[in-house]
Image (cartoon, rainbow, N blue to C red):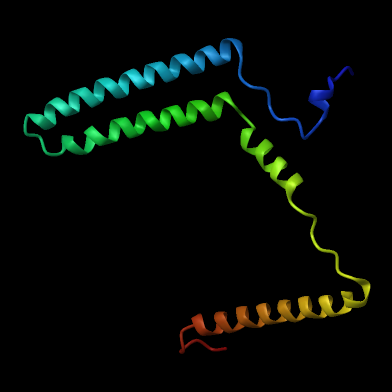
Amino acid sequence: MSESPREASPDAPPERLRGAAALRLHLTLAAGLALCAVAFWFELRRAEGGNGLSWAYVFEWPLLGIFAVYMWWKFLHPGRDAARERARARRRPPAPVVEAQYQGMLEAWQAHQRELTERQAVEDTQRSRPPWTPS
């Protein structure tokens, strides 16, 4: 098994699209933007001609084009958000450590919180039942 170090590492971000896949993505974006531009122009002419509903489409088509550019960018750069989150996690200070003398107090507090949550769930269930149903 000759895996490259990049493939073996689970922390490695996905590769950026290149070659035929990137070309298909660019062509899809170009076709989508051309469609949005033609539809915008068509609806603008109809709206100026008195069709009130077309004014909604005049604003919809450019928004759809902006969304297409956003999705194009996300597909072209996969894993960018995950890499950014990993970088933030490295900059974050480590979680505070509870000293041994206070560990029992922490566990008692957590148990008390679980008990309160369970009790609240039971009360909510009883409150949501109609009064005529038997307990």
